[in-house]
Length: 65
Image (cartoon, rainbow, N blue to C red):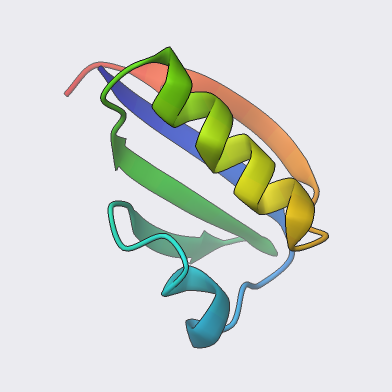
């Protein structure tokens, strides 16, 4: 399954490197992380990583490939 996770603000290169399994793009003041999420445990791990870095998730949704 593929997901798109929108984070408030512009994530630095150092922060985006924390998510090597996801691609990213900055759109209108938000960083959009996107890519394949293996399973629910992987998804919760990504969210925990975002939270531990103090990042605010604005939107998260599954996307068609």
